[in-house]
Amino acid sequence: MADTQQLDTPQDIPRDLHGLRRSPASLLHEVFAAGSTGGVVELSELEFLTMAGIRVDPQSETATRIASVTDGLPAHCGDVTGGGTNGKPDTAVLWLGPTEFLVVAPPDAHETLGGTLVPALVEALADGQGQVVDLSANRTTFELTGPRARAVLEKGCSLDLHPRVHPAGTALSTEVGGIPVILWKTAEDTYRILPRASFATFLGSWLLDAMREYASPEVP
Amino acid sequence: MLLIPCPHCGPRDETEFHYGGQAHVPYPGNPNELDDRQWAEFLFYRENPKGAFAERWLHSTGCRQWFNMVRDTATYDIQAVYRMGEPRPTTTPPGGGSRATGGPTGPSAAHAGTPASPEGARP
Image (cartoon, rainbow over all chains, first blue to last red; front, side, top):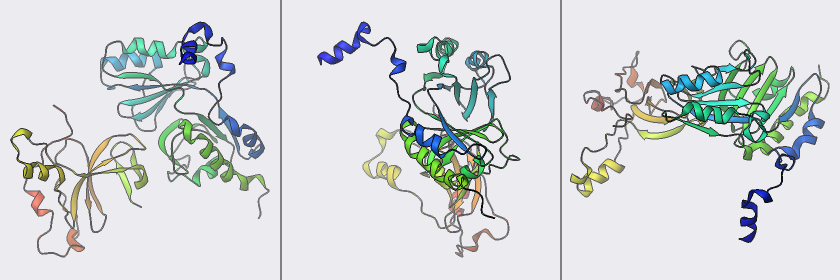
């Protein structure tokens, strides 16, 4: 009990908490590096991205205010707005449902690192109907890149990932290897995979296993 | 594995969905007036037809929205997908829909006449 009280007082919290935090797949970083093959397929974890969940009726005035913060809200399944085309290069909004969106931004957009993303969204929401929730710790982000990335994903994802159907700039909520994830194609041959934190170790190991055959030279 | 066409996300694997039982079961207008048997019938008694059946489904791994679907329980043929609150569409599958049932009266005939009460829209 005494310990809890001590930690609750701000002066006892270490100044630099960010040096202490560990990402959900941090135990796998070395095997990710060892299992990646440059120019074929590479896997890494993007740590501590800032994420905010938004629930709002896109037709409402509240949505207009929120859209002015995020530079628009995606309208259809798979759509992503932002992400390189405007002043905030790395802030993107993913469509999760007709009234549900996920904002993904770099780590320093979080207010603990001096960013203003979530407070700005909360301010835009004001007392309108909807919600803005800081979900930065909910999911972690894997980046799978390389010419073989699609082949790796196709082992565990039943969606059609051919570029004709699934072009860059598409984000879909689906399953990879039996794990519910958001699959976001950020560029040609580059995918971001967002599993919930508790699935990170399993999915990371699953992806490594799926990548293994591409590390050896192709047998004709 | 069923390939279910979600009205928001398009065709997805059955594993992304959860089943929600029979659709169009209206909540009683005044639950206090029901006796135990009527209440039990509202809670637990469901149709079990061989043939077209209107069901609720939840796309839990995708858009997390509920929707209705008319599915043939014998052939797994998905005849219609429509949003919550919409009435059940009349589904007469072209080319002999009762090929699997074979009965003289299609089970869906019992449903066809009754106007489905819109549900899903909360008051």
